[in-house]
Length: 165
Length: 177
Image (cartoon, rainbow over all chains, first blue to last red; front, side, top):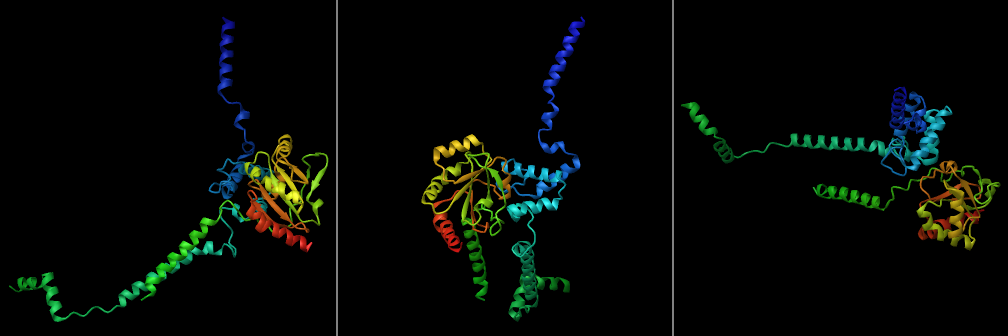
């Protein structure tokens, strides 16, 4: 009886070990071994960086070899106590501003940043000019014949008659 | 009011011109910030001779080409005959940066397809590649006698790039050196 119970427990333990993934498998990526604060910093930084191989994606989203390399570099630099600024500078030095999803404002990117505002300003000015022009346009003068026709079309004459009787 | 008719047409034409130009651009070619900057220093074991190191400083005073390649890289195969031909003509020393490869496969690859490199540096973990801003193999750098990167080819070298850009640049740089 005792032997049977022991065997049953052993079986349960074996199944349990097989179903539940070992902790090493969960912590497969080096990143999840770090403390949560560092992990959020890494995540935040990765979302700011473009994967140059799959350009629509950020480093955080991409699974390419390039993204893996950059991620490993970020982790090792953060472990070495580098600031976000230092890591970004390091990467920009090697890969250029294009690795940043938000390019810095400089002479080459001025049009990129100011462009939408300039277009908006042009649109507002055009609209203002058109509205003002329309307001200032003189009202068309009607001849006596036209006034009579307009009044008959609008039923003004009849209303007058009714009001008079 | 002729302007009213011409202006939208002009704006449209300008837009078309920009879009047309945009079609000709390759979005995967990201201009390297390393152009006209000193080539990053490296010292790596040689592919064929792990005990001896190879450094970019070894090439100081020479105009040289650094070609990033790997045996797993399909486009490297495409440009390889051009490199072999170029090295036979002896115009410029070509060094290789064997990127994230295994030694056996890399050596085997060169044995089968020919070895255009005076030597290849063995960059197993891609650390030197990272310093050079490598993100797509093959990539090729032209480095002048002062160790400054003057040109970067992203993706395989083709006849057009070689004849019209790389070789004229190398001749010009060699003339200055």
